[in-house]
Image 1: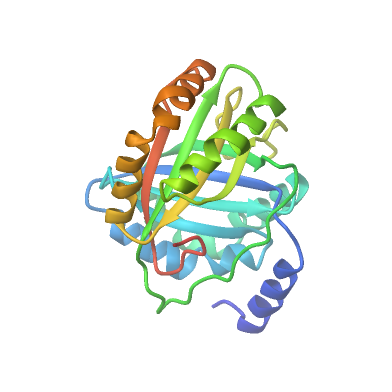
Image 2: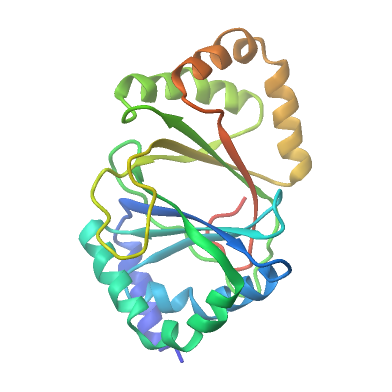
Length: 252
């Protein structure tokens, strides 16, 4: 049982802090187990992590893979990450429910460790209640590079890409780059990679599809930006189209 007063105090402390480390976690699940896993996650693994110093920013169904979930977990900094994860995975809630959770999971190693692209931090949004409405689409886009993301690309993204995205209906909510610090907890992350991640939210799938159609018709995008972007990347962009659970903080 989670102490509600402690949870409220934790929420107040978090509201005064900011997150400078983020895990983008993608889990492959056993067929037909996703709803069971997410119901367990929302019920048992949100408050119990946040009371110990993590932010659970969002948990999502992948629209393009019925056996995948994506979730986001943030921390004040790397030392706080080690402390929070040690407390949670060594604590009573995970111990009570880990067998049920692990029975749903095929692979949980697809994890990017990130930090804010602007070098600052972000303050968590208010989390939805259990009765909140889960709707809309969150689109997460991942760019891969052969070296750490530099200021030149960040300027290119802000000055060239963001205005076209905005004009075609996508508002960039936030952007992140790979955190270069060594992994300081036993759970694996994808090390030695260089990623830039941004996400936008849409009212529904139709709004997202209108954005994609408008982007394809944009002369600025087609004639200049898309080619320059391809030249800089070492792989095609990865796009995750996600729908939030009822307790996800991040939603349209």
